[in-house]
Amino acid sequence: MAQFLWPSERQRGCATASRPIWTRIWQPLSPGAVGWEENPDRTPLDLKALFGDKPVWLETGFGGGEHMVHQAATYPEIGIIGCEPYINGVAMLLGKIRDAGCENVAVHPGDVRDLFDVLPPRKHRQSFLLYPDPWPKKRHHRRRFVTPEYLEPFHKVLKPGAEFRVATDIPDYVRQTLEEVPRAGFEWLGECADDWRTPWDDWISTRYEQKALREGRTPHYLTFRRI
Image 1 (spheres, rainbow, N blue to C red):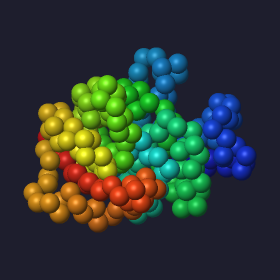
Image 2 (image 1 turned 30 degrees about the vertical axis):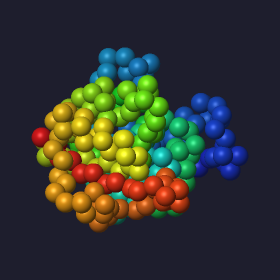
Image 3 (image 1 turned 30 degrees about the horizontal axis):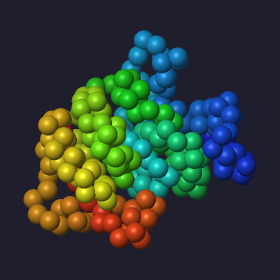
Image 4 (image 1 turned 60 degrees about the horizontal axis):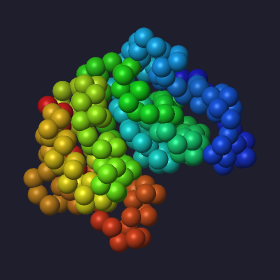
């Protein structure tokens, strides 16, 4: 994968940086034509051209990128595509990629629903949803990822048997996840309390998790398998 150009300190901290500047920065890490303007026919991305024969993982809403870069560095034999709509998160990720020297990462700085449109079906072997926006007001619950609007296309892009990991500190998000994800064609692999209390062996705690712990909220770790 091509090297990306590192932004200046001023650009890195500016949430309102112009789109042309940010396009030049992250474009070498792009998974391909995702947006409707550049891909109106919704032609599937060429994952082989992107990562060769490597298995491909997906992280939805990577936040500051700690976990995504940790996984990419731990497993150089895989490729990982991350999606994050907030520019500040993308900027933080770029710094971590630079420091870790990862070359098996692709980034879509936008809505994951657009990415689902162009991902080839039944290809991704593992996926992560870590501390997603909880949309705490009841009238906003339909905006959560764990709803049919997201889960149906998400299910289509995963390989049968693919693992789906969810981490959240919001009890109501846990409830909705355990209700909606199995309905979308997944089975929960939890068998005892430790299965949701204990993080995965290759887990790295994110800044969102550290904030939850400081504020006295309990992390939950849920593992599902795509049926």
